[in-house]
Structure formats: structure tokens, C-alpha cells
Length: 74
Image 1 (cartoon, one colour):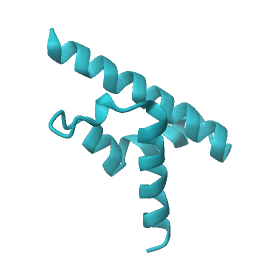
Image 2 (cartoon, one colour):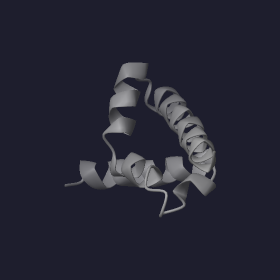
Image 3 (cartoon, one colour):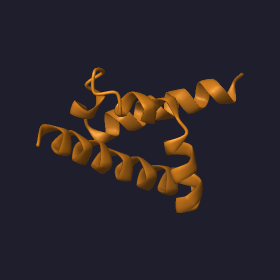
């Protein structure tokens, strides 16, 4: 039961991240999904030991944008 709730939280945040990317970067859903699902942020979000799923979607999105900026500057 608890695992289902945690997975639901992750799913909701993931959907928000995809939506934010689509709006901010004017990209397709498929592109946004590719970015999110292949990110370190998504990996951390799914690692229940990090408790990142407790944060708001906007907080996690800022984390994702920081990750994207770092990878862009390499």
C-alpha cells in the first residue's frame, strides 16, 4: 500500500515535469518525456531513499532545470 502511494507521488510529479518542459521549452510531449525519463532527477525521484517525492513539483522542476543547464555547459 505504501509503495503504491509513493509510486503515485512520483507519477504525479513526473507528469508535471513533462508539462512544465513542454510549456517552457515549447517542445513535444515525446521530447519532454525523453528528457525526464533519461534524467538523473528522475532517477533520484524514483529512489525512495532520497525523499525527493516529498517535494513540490516546482521544486523538482528547478532541480531538473539545474541538471539540464549543467549538462548543456559541459
